[in-house]
Image 1 (tube, protein in one colour):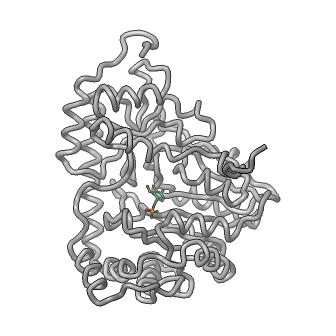
Image 2 (cartoon, protein in one colour):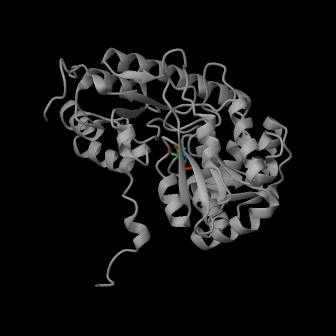
Image 3 (spheres, helix red, strand yellow):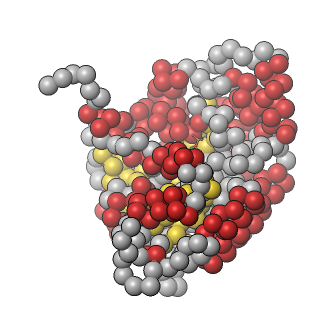
Length: 399
Ligand SMILES: Cc1ncc(COP(=O)(O)O)c(C=O)c1O
């Protein structure tokens, strides 16, 4: 057999469905509510700081694990907000939280180790597990139903996912794609299992500041006994609307920081130097920046909820992040893939098929995710196009 092929590892996952949807949306000039990037401007102060850093010739490799002012700002803000002492030596700056997650997984996982992952999950966690040699164990988040208004997991199912081989649990709160914000009780239950089985938590908190309706973001590192067993992951992308800058970080206990820094160094050397300098300025913005940003997203959330409900989608109202998961059963298509292709080509609006967020695609067959980190004009253009969409009268329709 020819050796001119990709690796076995690379055959175990497909290209990103979310990025594919963006390409399809561009090809059909659809309103793109698939990939989670803002179509509005980043804060002027942050852009000016990046330009100033470039003009000051901050243009060479930064210290591999991150420029000191940014690491100090990350440590200072975490300590100030959550009362857990963090120092700059615990912070590793990476090329986005995507690389932070990959470097963390590669640094702490050995082949055969098990990793618990809630599903629906942010699609990167699947390939991250495969590339790091982890065996994922999935725990389902169930959509709101009846008197239960948030996505929930069955504590027994979660407990059953832990065993001697479990090395880590991947958590994402506020959550993409569900908009769930994990409660203190839920985090306590997860933490108890981590302590019982000597497991680490890898907590992706990239939507930390995008939170609604008086909810509170609780980092699992703040739960008793968790600071020494949690890697918190975050970045500039979502909070400052700079997804293309590729600056993220880990906050980790000393026991694993060296391993994460080594993996990070040999993967990417370092994150963009002038953009790290701008990041340090961004993290110094006053608290009302974050309050206004969250209020802006809450307004957009309510606007897209109204639009989608008017056009016959069943919506699961998010409490954080900037996505709405919907149920599309009413349209009578065979599955989410068939529906999303119709939606992009014939209606002119793009979303992400629910199946891409599950290990077993069947679980997401009736779901579709839309994002609302978009200008009002973009959401209104989607509204206009969705007016052509009609619910099926009976059964499945053929397309
Ligand atoms: C849960 C989650 N984590 C990480 C990322 C990627 O973040 P970054 O741009 O910092 O790599 C995203 C982007 O959509 C996300 O939704």
